[in-house]
Length: 112
Length: 114
Image (cartoon, rainbow over all chains, first blue to last red; front, side, top):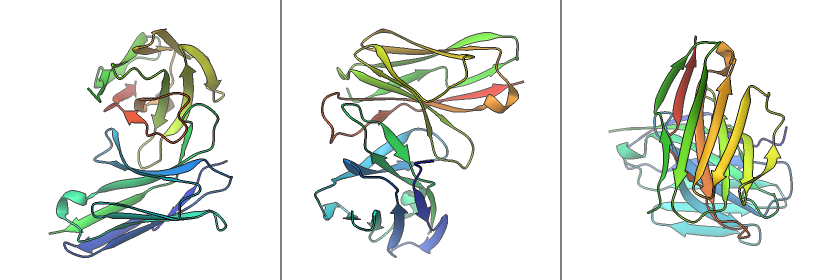
């Protein structure tokens, strides 16, 4: 299976704390993307980092990518109760299409 | 309009029924996807359409039959499903020939096979 692994599987923190999720993958990639899913509904794209980038920021999100270790991390700073959701990394290594292979996911619970 | 619309939101069907899931987008995306997601698991890719032609079939059983009648619509025809096919079915679309681009997902159809 080409599926990536994420850890931790579940994370519970207090509002205002930072949350860090890690993703490891198996093959060379074009890019790595992070998605959020609320209550088993649709996925929302958060951020995309290209294979030649090492770090990227978007608002309270910071993503790093280490292609030598085939790993990425997502940091959410100053978390809010509304950040409670499942977070998935997804690797893109296909050709012209955006064939995404999702990691196992991290369930984040932010306590108010 | 950055929305992918899936209908119906919920579907209950018997093992002998035939039903269809529908997906629509108006972003001009020429790549469209079907994913299947079981509870507490990540989405798993089923099919990819590129320029309305099936380009990837991830060894999906023939009881699932995709169709892309035009560049805005994607259907998934269901026939003789099994209870283990109960899952959330997600449609997505993305720009084609643009590698570093995001995918847009619909809200999914929650399918229950009885």
